[in-house]
Image (cartoon, rainbow, N blue to C red; front, top):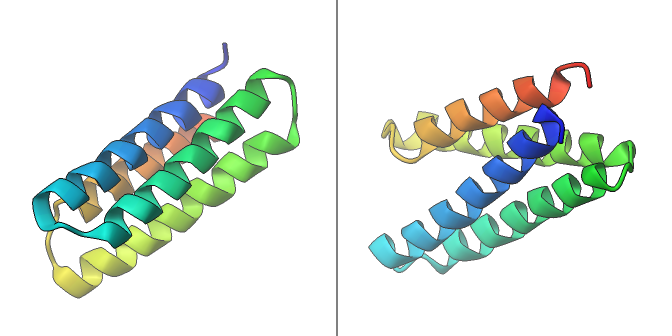
Length: 102
């Protein structure tokens, strides 16, 4: 299994967990819905990569890049490192791992 698949799946699980945590902590349905949708999208991209679908890596990169952008805007707006900063760092690490040669 490639590093790209593992990074995509791990970031997907983190997105889902973050959405659930946001709902539990703040009763934020938006956090749960957006975390679940983006996390499932990343898990689907990882599964499709595992099946040999080359385009799935681009799907994972697109979702991860979108999440990094959204959380960067949130960090600028709120100036709170948690959870935006953590998701930015994890997203950049996942993107870097996805860009490694297979």
